[in-house]
Length: 422
Image (cartoon, rainbow, N blue to C red; front, side, top):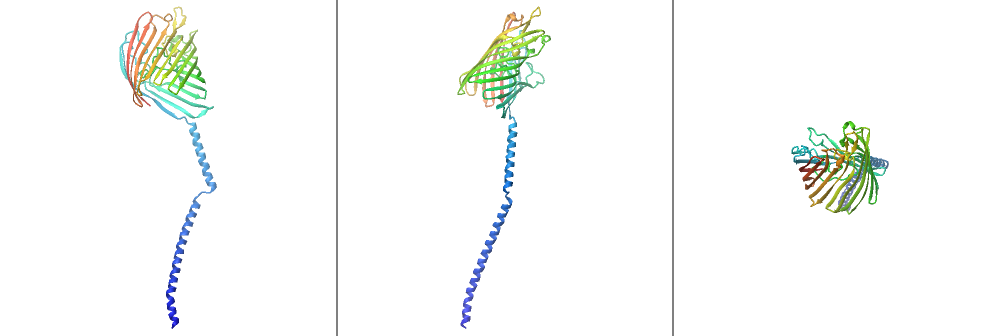
């Protein structure tokens, strides 16, 4: 009897042990499932990750792609679009003969002229290479407009004004293209005269012509040389006498200049031009000496200009009367002197004032009666920057022309222009 009592007493203890065992088994089973899940995730991670050789192959491929991209970028020339959309209104008093941009006062009274135009707008491209050519940086530009002369046509052509390709080294430069004469590097500031340079026929030698240039810099000094192609048809010689309408020319220029803190500077140059015109069987020299300057004595004041003296100078953009044919058939060159000057003042950050004047004087004894012996121009303008890219300008100018042995004429010209710069 006592044994049964003991067995009955042990039954609850056995049940407790069984429950404990089952709980431990359940816990082990749960931990086992978690371990299996972690093992599965680790296997998936290991199987998805490339091996060391595969990783090296990917890195090499990416390096090749980057190198290819850099080579492509180095072979490109970034091009920037620039220029000026110019709307111009003008009024010329009698004597301008109805032309848009007069450079002389006509001997006959003619008629007054007024109008508006956008054909002096300019479109340009600037480019520069990220790489180098023989250690030099490459750059260049090309500017075009719709100018077709002094009277507006039905469909103004697209004209190349200037273009250049330049390589710059530390102390020297080489450039080639369509450029202003080397001996006349500066221009007055004007938005009224864009199709032709300001003070044309009044001392500014400006005509853009094909040329190649070299420049050497040593301290404050620059030595420059240019080989150019002259345009002989602009000399005013009879077409039947012009043996060659294109002739080679040589120009030299020495410059002394320096800048202080980018606010004050000076540049003074002296140069010369040598070429030869051929009319029939005669060879006629073109010889010009020049001096030019650009001085900024104060941050908001600049003075610039040019002086020249020589013979047969007109193929560089001056009065078209380089020669005189005598009664006996002998051809003589015309001797000339002239120049121009400008004072520019930045009155405020938005307003700039410009005063300029120029003169071209041909020796009367070299001319026939009735030819323009003395041509003078003077004017002023105010430019107001309405917005960072919008400029409003008003300009007034007077042109005086003295004709040998006959009359003196003058015209007044007034321009209102607005330009969007891009």
